[in-house]
Each structure stands twice: as C-alpha cells, then as structure tokens.
Image 1 (tube, one colour):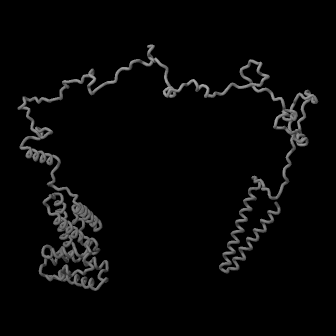
Image 2 (cartoon, one colour):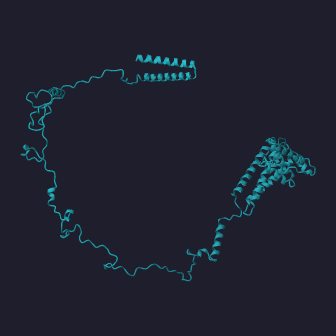
Image 3 (tube, helix red, strand yellow):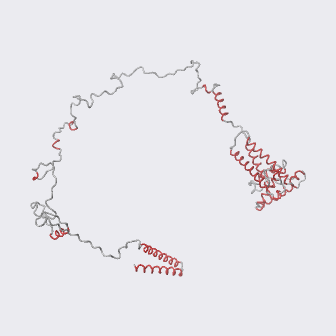
Length: 453
C-alpha cells in the first residue's frame, strides 16, 4: 500500500488548523492498525478542505488537496486486502467499524479518568482524550452523507436510541460534549485522584508520625510542656507551690518607715469647738500689712436719688415723675431768662401751620371752653398722579391671552426675519421675499391690535 501523505506534506497555512493536522497524524498512526479508520481520517480532511474551498486559497493547498485525493483513491482501489476493500465500499460496514473503534476509546477514557491516581501519566491521558475526540468526529461523515442515510440502519447501530441520522448525530455530539468536559477538568487539575487519602487516613498517619517522634509514647500522655507524666513516681499526686504570705509587715507607727499615711484632720469644718476658727480670715491686702480702714473712703458707691426742694417735706421714699407743666404749644419764652442757653420763639407763621396740622390738645387756658368739643382738622388728601402711558397695565385674566398672543406674534416675526436673512446669504431671493412678506403681515396685524388697545 503506497503512502503519499505525511505530516510534512501539509502546507504551512494549514498546519495550525485543528481540523487538518490532528486527523492526518491519527491517520498515519492507524495505517497498519485500523486501515478503515485511517482512511476516513483522510476523507474527513478532504471534505473539510473542499466544503470550505480552502484549495482555492493558494497553489500549495491546491497541490495538497490533489495529493490527498490520489492517496484516498489508491487506498480504496488496493486489492491486497479484500476485507478492507469490502468495508470501504459498504457504508454500513464502514460506520460500524468506526463506531466500534471510537466508542471503545470513549468508554476507556471515562474509566481511566475515574481510576486516575498520582502515578498516572497525565500527558498520555490527555493525548488519548484528544485522539478519541478525533475518532468520534469521523461519524459526522456518515450522518452528513444523504446517499448513505438510506442504506444505514440507524436504529440497529445505536441500539434503539436513534431511528434516523439526525438523532444519531445528536447522540454523538452529546458524547463529544462529555469527553470535552472531562478533558478540561483533567487539564485544569480538577479531577479527584483515586489514591488521595481522606481525612481519617490523614489523621491516622499524623498520629503515627507523632508517636514516632515521641519515642513510642502516645501523644495523650505528654503534657503541654513536652514532658512525660510522672504520676507513678510521685505517688499520683503532684504538689503545686504557691507563693506564701510575707513574714514581715511594715511598721506603720515608725516615722522612719518609707510608707506613711495622711493623718486625721484636727477639726471638722462644722465643729462646734470654740477654737475651730481663732482668727478671722485674712485677705491679700492684710498679708502685706496694709490696713483696710482707708479703703472705705476710696470706694465710691452711688448715692441716693435727689429730689426737688419743694418735695423734701414729704416722707415718701420713692417719687414718680409728675405731669408736665408745659405743653408743646405753650409759650416758654419767659422761662430761664438768666441762663446762658436762650430759648428763641418759633416763627409765628410756621407755628400756626404746625398748629393747624396738629390735633389740638385740651388745656386749662382761660380763652378756651373746656366743655366744647375740640375741632379736628383732617389732613390734606393726597392727590393721585395723573395716568401716563409709561405706567404698566395690570395683568388680569381677561387680558392675559392678548399679552400671550402679542408675545407669540413678535416671536414669529423674528423667525421670519431670520429666515429671510439666511435665504439672502444663499442668494435665495424668492424665499427671502416670501419670509419678509409673511413677517410684514404679522407686523401689521400686531400694530393694528396695539392701536385698538
């Protein structure tokens, strides 16, 4: 059997493709072990290149595709082994061989990961998982072949779990999903090792190591200080030595002692003894030898209030101010003529004007009748300023709509003027004329409304 395809035959642009290089590598591994599975590994790569039109990307990929076609065709036409030729020409036999080989590896991978230990080679197990994923993917060649669907008994192959190609493909994808999940746990180191000791085994091992370190003595017989219990040597009782009481106490009556307590007071503040306070308290001035007799003359206190001489014959202790002798409109020009401060009489005209505007008071003057009611002159009425156009109108509910309409009209006129200026900037005479006419019409209506008001 001639072998045309090797790993070196793969172009550089396709070597990093996970759908090409792993399948060619597995095909080369199974050439002599399982030629049918090896053949379908190359068929998978060939269909992947043709379906994605990778052969049109470069001359190297095109040459590799032609080389792969010749290799698969030569394997199928080889007459050295008739059983292999019969299996390759029958789709039902081919899928049975591929299914049996891939599912055996699938079950083996799950068993290996459930029985994994620290001695298990992790890289080898990861490689086995990845190879099994490649072989499970080969089954999609048969599920995607519409001509082979009629010749394959899917119910018999799946053990009654699927009756058509679509259902069988779903079952196969589920197994691929399980295998990828276990592979991710294996790579991340999240698997549970079979030989991993549990908590009880760890405690037993720890106790054994401690006993070896203590010379075979159980750990419970050793106290906290690391010493062995010697209960038998001491008769089962171990005395505890506590500090005793001091033999000598300090002599409190001895004045030479270093310790001394304050004595009791000679007298109590509220005591009735005559000699409790022999002398009156002294002040700061008395300490300096100064007498307090002359300080009484230096300290000035406010004196008693003085009253007029005419009221001195009364015995009242407190006096209240009496009624005023003179009223504001009384003549006081004859008072205090000898004083340096002279009182000048007011202007008669001004006094008469003030008196006329002031409410007259009732006095005991001889030229007025007390029984007659006083005449009250009313103050001059203030005259309201004449109404001018500058004063603002009072806003009421009746004219608020007119004010709003006026404001809205002014805003529209401004907009028309702006649009006209913008149109003139672009030399659009027609639009400028239209906007100006509309604004002018609104301005005329607004002027007419203002004239009516």
